[in-house]
Length: 275
Image 1 (cartoon, rainbow, N blue to C red):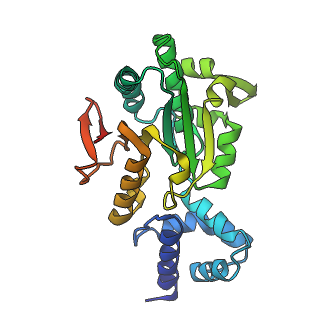
Image 2: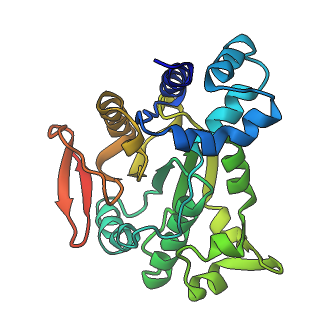
């Protein structure tokens, strides 16, 4: 094995231990594209040297910067559309029928730059407008992410034209955003106030999060090994109230765990109900 291959293997091991992400053996190009600038800034010549530096200087902040760079993903507003429509047409009416005065709690795991939790808040607003008086207890959305820079962006709630253009209709832009400056938009306070953001590594404990009616864990589990994925799904199950719902990504399936989750066909899409 060459020194370059050995360094990549060391980096793969580091990343899986740090945040659960299991890099394929053919992902050197991805690592290079995400870390080249950071390595240049720190005069680091190889991945092996990078791992050595992170281990020998744990307080330097380099480890956090590397994890940040490797876990930051582009995201969309109302990604795949159907989860948000199913939320409004099926899940919320069902939950509110059981407990009409209850506050609905939703967890957006891996919130990235905030598009998913803010899309959820907009969907809640649309549901309330169409069903006045139904959501008497209101709704609270928790967005979590591993990346400190992403959480900073989430809390600011401001986006440029490029980010706004990814999945947001003109109608929703006008209704839910304020124009802050040319080409820059901010989420309106009423939508922001429903959302709280917290740092969380999905490998860590969820004990402080409380209980949820709905969990969105979409397009995240594909990065984990089967064993880690199963562990996360079991621990998410423990956060969900009886009868609660789990939303996965369009290309993700929940194989196994039949004692914990029941598949629900929604046409289009599939969601999972807690048993």
